[in-house]
Image (tube, rainbow, N blue to C red; front, side, top):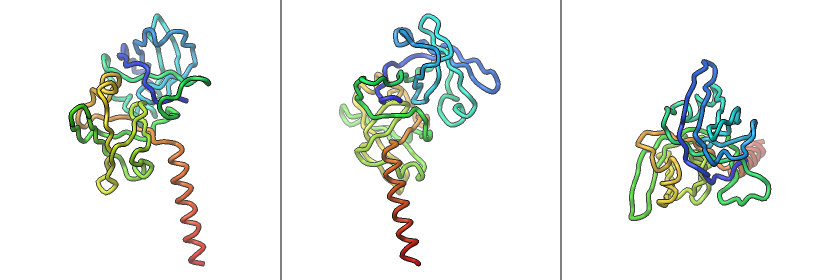
Amino acid sequence: MFTGIVQDLVSVREIVDEGDLVRLVLDMDATANALQLGASVAVNGTCLTVTRVVRGRVHFDVITESLRTTNLGRLEVGDLVNVERSYHVGDEIGGHILSGHVTATSPLSGRFVQGHDHVLRFNLEPKWLKYVFHKGFIGLDGASITVSSLDRADNWFEVSLIPETLSRTTLGQIEAGGLVNVEVDGQTVTTVETVERIMSERQVASNL
C-alpha cells in the first residue's frame, strides 16, 4: 500500500526492451537507502517490484500489461517519474491509501493559472468518472490530490495545485495531451457499487 505522498522525483536512467517486458532503471539515490529486493515501489503510481539495487540505481521489470495500461510505456531515458516506497505500519498517512493498481490513464486537456492557484483539467471515461467526486481524493501519477471541480456531462475533472506540488511531482511538467496514471479511491468505488446494486435490486423487486 501507499499513501499518495510522493517522496521523490527521479530520473529514468535506462530502459531495456526485452520483448515481453521492459527493464526500467531509476536513479533513486538516497531514496533507495535500505531498499530490499522484492520491495514494492510506486512509480508514477504503478506498483513495481524491486529486482536489483546498485548504488542508488534501482531496477524494475515492467510487464506488457503495465506498459499498455499506464504511462510507463511512454517513458524515455531522462524523463522524471514520481516514486513512493511502500507504507509501513506507524508511518504518517498524509494523503489517502493507494494500492498502486492504476485504474486508467487520463489526458491533460487544460491548464489554468489563477494567481498562485494552478488548475489542471483531465478527461476521464464516464465509467471511471462516476467514482470521482468534488472534494474527494484521486491518485494522479501516484500523488494524492483533492478534486476541485468536475463536469460529468463533458467527462472532465479538475485539480488545483500549489507550487510545492508542481515542483515535487510530474504534475508540474505535464503538457497538453500528456497522460497521467489515475487511481480512483477504493472506498468510493465500494460505496458507489453498493448503492448501485441496492438500487438495481429494488428496481427489480418493484417490477415483480
